[in-house]
Image (cartoon, rainbow, N blue to C red; front, side, top):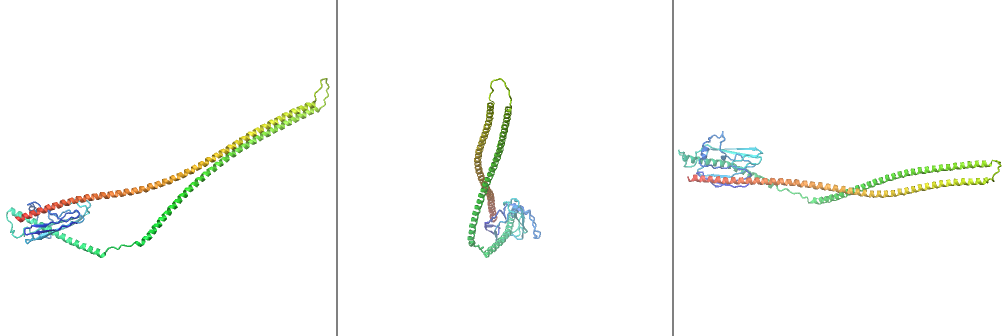
Length: 469
């Protein structure tokens, strides 16, 4: 907070001179002195009722430019320091100064004061000071004499009374400011003394713990590496278990396929056994037929022999007969040839059928063996391809998990960065708004300062003019 002191001297005629001090702090403007044009103060003060009793202390209805900023809006009051010294003439006595301080709480910005900016704090200190002069014209300096009936003299006296009234009000206000500054200085001295007595806070020495901390960090890093290795071994074990499970499933499928092939071969064996039984039955039928033919042949032969053994004496005159023995031998030979021929035909047919069936069985066995070999090769190829597929799928799953973890990690990092960006942007916007607000307040303070300088210059000019008169 900047501080500037003002030394003002009041001579017998009420001339104020010296340097003006304006203390700026936050956005408060207090003790704003406004000098109206000539003649305006007389008309205003003449219309105000005078009160001499200090008990009632009525509130004077002064214009806003004669009060001390009725809407001082800030958490801390700005200080205005002005020292007034009086000359031999002195100021008018019997003035009553009443001061009222009201502290309210508000969250909304208030209206502008006449020369002040609106407050943005939650505490609003409003100070009103009303001065009532009980002895206007009682002691305005030596040589005043009294009142005359001229308007010019009454105007001059009213202006002097107005200036003296303003000086009294400034004096009472500055007395309060000086008392507050004194109390503030005492409080600062007490705080400084307390801080010096307390002394700086001793910092603890943690150098002895750094070795333990470093050892713990190394152990944590080693444990992290071991944990990563264990996790890697677990992943490898899971992959190996998946491979063994896949191999087991393939072997189980192969076993089921072999069992199905064995069942097919058994069914084919049953069919072959049935065919063999059928052929054996046909052989038995042919053997029975052969036995039946042999039996018939024996019966026919026995009948012929019995016929031949019978004696028949027939005498005829004919040519000499043939030899029966020779005929029987020829017939025997003929039937034997027929029987042998049938036997050879049946044996040839049986051999042909057996050869065909054996050939078919051999061809079927060879085909089955070739098919089994091809099926085994195809199953091995399929097993290898499925194992490779499972390995690729496992690798794909691991890569997808790694990708998902990486995306989640980078998404979280990106979200954190976005939050930081939003926070920084909000801080930047707040800083910019604060800078704009401070710039606006600075401009308003400069405006108030320029107006105060103009008012002080006008006030001095009026005083100089009154002095010259």
